[in-house]
Amino acid sequence: MSTKPLAARTGRSLQARRRTITAYLFLAPALSFLLVFFFLPLAQVVYYSFTDFNLYRSNWVGAANYTALVNDPLFWLSIRKSFIYLLCTPILIVLSLSLAIIVNRSLRGIAFFRAMYFMPAVISAVAIGMIFELVFADQGLLNGLLRGLGLVRISVGFLQDPNLVLPSIMSVTIWRGVGYYMVMFLAGLQAIPKELYEAAAIDGANTLQQHLYITVPGVRPIIVLVGVLSSIAALRAFDEIFIMTSGTGGILNSGLTAMFYLYRQAFVFNNVGYASAIAVVFSLIIIVFTLINLRLGGAR
Amino acid sequence: VSRLRRRLASAGWYLLLTAVMLVTAVPFAWAALMSIRETAANPFPRNRPAQVLPYPGLVGWGEGLREARATGEYAGPGGWWRDYGPEVRERLEGTRLEPYTFPATTENYYRVAQDIAIGRYFMNSLLVALGAVALTLLLCSLAAYPLAKLRFAGRDVLFIVVLSTLIFPEQLILIPLYVMAVNVFGFQNSFYGLILPFAASGLGIFLLRQIYYAIPDELIEAARIDGASEFGIWWRILLPLIRPGLATLAIITFVGSWNNFLWPLLMLSDTSLFTLPVGLSYLRGFFSGSLRTVAAGIVIATVPIIIVFMIFQRQFIQGLSGAVKG
Image (cartoon, one colour):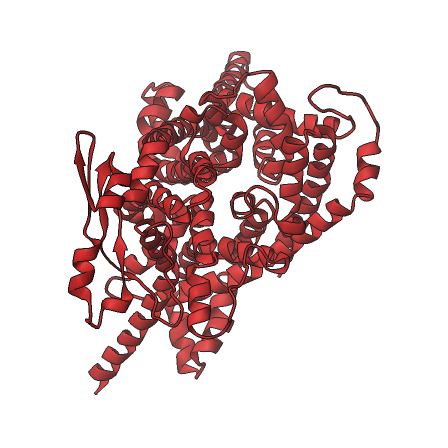
C-alpha cells in the first residue's frame, strides 16, 4: 500500500468515499421510512409500557404495568388461547404438504386445480370470515348438512358455544392458508430430483416410504419456512376473530387471543400503557418461539 | 390393459382433485346462493330436501320493491320489479325438481347498492393498493441495490438492521405507530396514513437483494467503464433485469394492502374513505339482521378479485414460488 504513489492512494480513497455516498443515497429513502415507522415505534412501545399513558395523561409508573399483567387472569387466558391457536401450524404443514404432493404431477388442467386451491389466499380474511358466518349459521350449510345426515337434532352453535368458537375460527384460518402454503411446498417439491424417486422405487420403497424418506427431508427448509410464517400468522390472527365474534372477542372471552386482548386494551379501553406491556411480553414470546423454530429447523 | 389402468388412475386423481376443490369452492357457492334468497327463507326445511336450485322470483331494480311484493308487479318512473315466483312454481309443480328449488331474487343486491357505497370502497382499496405497490417497489428496489452490489463501509451492519425488522412481530409497533399517525402526522382519514407506514418493507428489500445478487458483476463493471452513472446503471440496466422479482413483490404488496383490515379500521372513521374490508365489516353491522343481504355484499366485493386472480393466477403462483426459491 505505502509503496504506491500518493496520487493513486488518495484517488482510491476518494473513489471509495464516493461509492459510500452513492450507496447511502440509494439507501436513504428506505432507511428513513424504517427509522420513522419501525425503529422509533419499537423504542416507544417499550417506553409506553412503563407509563400509564392513555388519551389524557402520561406518567412514569415503573414496572406497575408488568406486575398488573402477571396478576391479570385475562392476560394469561389470552396467552393460552394464542397457544391453542398455534395448533393451526402443524395442521397446516401436514395438509398443505399433502396437497402439494397431490398437485405435483403433470395432469391436463392441473394448473386450474392449483389456482382454485390457492384462491382463498387472495381474498380478504374479512370476506372469508363473513362467508363462514353464513356456513356456520343456524340455518347455514354446515348445520344443514349435519341435520340432513341425522348427526345432530338441534343446530350446533359453532360461533355461540364457548367451547366451539375458537376451533371454528381456527378452521377458517386453516382453510384460508392451505392453498397458500401448498404453493410454497410445490416450489420445494419441484426442486427434488426425480431420479431419487426412481431409484427408491427400484429398491422397492412404496409411495408412503418414498415421501417419508425423500420428500420430507427434501422440503425440510420449506417446512421450517412454512412453520415460521404460519405460526407468526396464527399468533397475530385478528381479522377473522373480529368478524366472527362481531368485534367482541366471543362469548365468555372464548375468542380472546393475546392479539385481540391487546387490541381491546389499546383501542377499546384506551389503556395504551398497559396494552404496550402486553405487546412487549407477547412479542418476546413470539420472538423466542420463532428462534426456537429456526434453531430446531436449522440443526440437523 | 395398461392404457386402461392409466386411464383409471388419472380418473382417480381427478376425483380426488375435484373433491378437494369442492372444499374450497363450496363456501363461495353457498354465499352466492344465499345472496339470491329471500330474507325469511330457510334453505333446509324440515323433513324435506334442501332447496338449492334457484328459479326466478322477485326480480328487478330501483324503487317499487315493496309494491311488487304486495301486488306482484311494479313499473314506475324510478324502477321496475316483477314477481315470477307464482308462475314458475305452477310450472314446477309435481315435477321431480320441485322440492329442491327456491325463488331467486335481486332484492339483496338492490339493497346493498342502495345503502352502501361499495363501488367507492372498491376504488378506495384500489387506489391505496396501487399507491402502496408503487412506493414499496421504489423504496425497496433502490435500497436493495447497494446492499447486493456495492462495497461500502457499514453495508453488513445495515443489512442486519434491515433483516432484524423481520423478526419483530407487527403487533409490537402497532400502538406507537397509531399514536404517531394520529398525533404527529394527522394521518386519520387520509390515504397517506394507509400507504406510508408500511412502504419500506424489510422482506421486500431482502427479496430484491437476493435477485440483484444473481446479476453478474461484469455487467455493472462494463457499464461503469462506459461512463454510466450509478443511478443510470440502476435505472437502465438493473431494473429491467429484476422485473420478475419486482412482479413478485408487487403481488405480495398488492394482496397485503388490499386485504389489510386492522390498520384501516383504526385510521378511517369517514365512511366515504373506507377500504373494501372495512366497508364489508361496516355493511355486516348495517345489515346485521339479514344474512342474505350481507351475502350479496360479499359477492359484490369478492367476485372482481376472483376474476383478477383467475386472469393473473399464473403470475400469482409463480411469483410466490419464486419468492420461496430466492
